Length: 281
Length: 350
Image (cartoon, rainbow over all chains, first blue to last red; front, side, top):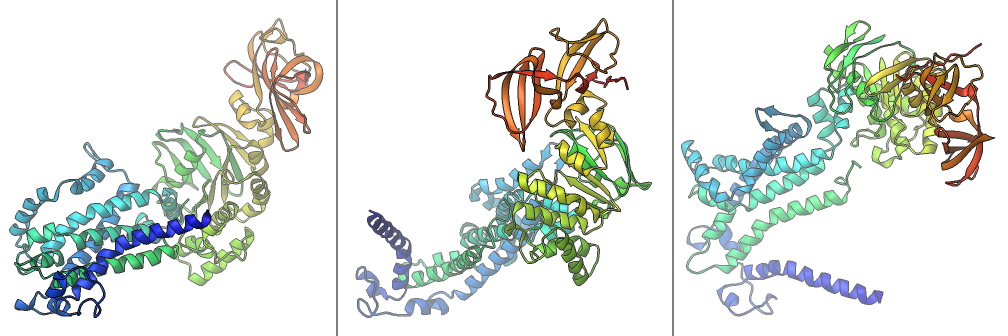
């Protein structure tokens, strides 16, 4: 009985893993095919079923008619995502700490209204924000620049950071801040010396979300850039000409997924080491 | 000397109402009161965590309210076990010393001594979440006493510990608190026994007010009001309606308890307080058991008596069942009388 259960369990897991991993295998094998191999049915094993070609991968690092150079969009994407994520995390953590520990009041506006204001930025469909963002960036001459995109991405990522961190700070007993002040810290000192070191788990999670949302954004990267500053998701789409180069597209897709996969692996290691285990009961 | 002058707060839960008191250095003051009496609020206000709405607090003549929390030279032990989860036990205790500007080595050396004092020698490199509740509270205690603060506040420090640990730490407290002997120690608790055992002086709080302050023994023997008598008695004191008519004391139903050496007030209604040890088994009062509970080596029996409900303390463990009938005796010498407004009007002929 138990044996049957175990077998069934592993069969299910195997099935599900295949389902999850299969698109990557497909992309990997396709990235080493040429036009003939792509159109001649589902084949997976190089040399045996098809003759591998590195054309797809080469095209990513050449330019002109040979393909599109991936290096510049990759660096652009990395810069915009990293800078916007770091700034959002810093601002978001400070804002969330203030909102979780102090009561603000300006007329009828209270803490809950401020929190909702942050979250409301993500409730709106992006298209609503597109035109205002476009006009604002145009006004300050930041269309089609890294700086302009960073600004817009901060506006998009800040609510996520605030949202995650408010929830996290809520789980840290305020007595901990009080104790730090009793023990000789200023309010700012209490934050940096006691609360921040105990918030690493929350900051890692918020940072993950920022990186994922920033890295994967296509819409604003598409609307707010033209030729000078191209981000990775837009560059992928621009590959799609009259003949779709499936081999380049697959290689491109794999490369664009890699950074997030690496981040996930690092965070997973970090989590399993116990650093993220709840310190508060 | 710590002085409170008409201290009031506007805390929505338990507002403090015009508290005035003096606290001298070198003494342990226990603050006794039920949950919601304002004990925690008083301690939080003193240390500066909650704002006052009126009044003043002076420490040796200096206005304490103008001093920021970090400079108040106070230490606090919370009811919850509050330690810094990211620091090991040694650095937890050294933390306040480091903030005062002591070097790492010196602070750690003193922290180590404090840890040895609270019985946690050898635990220096553990992280707080790896310790038991009692050990975590010992760390918090070590961190509080290592500062040699001028005022040490302890807010029901034993409340979240199990019975055995509570007794153990309670026995150790006088020795541990001696470390802070030159300071003022304010220790809040809901347990009369703890308050009596630890305090040089007892402060009784009720509904945001200080209702009595003085020597624990004196307050226990002669509580000034019925509220104080209720707070200070464990097992609970029982209050029954009575009356003095024609110079004779009787309960509302007419039962005559006898008056032994009591000097009775003029005719009129009174409240008769029956201490749990005033009742004993064997007598001519018919009683019915409504609840029996064990406390250590005693049995606490809740009784329905002809003149009201009362609690009886019986030495040893006895089996009583709800609804059991038994005869009890009432010792009139152990009765106390309170006026209708709650003031103690007990007088005895010497």
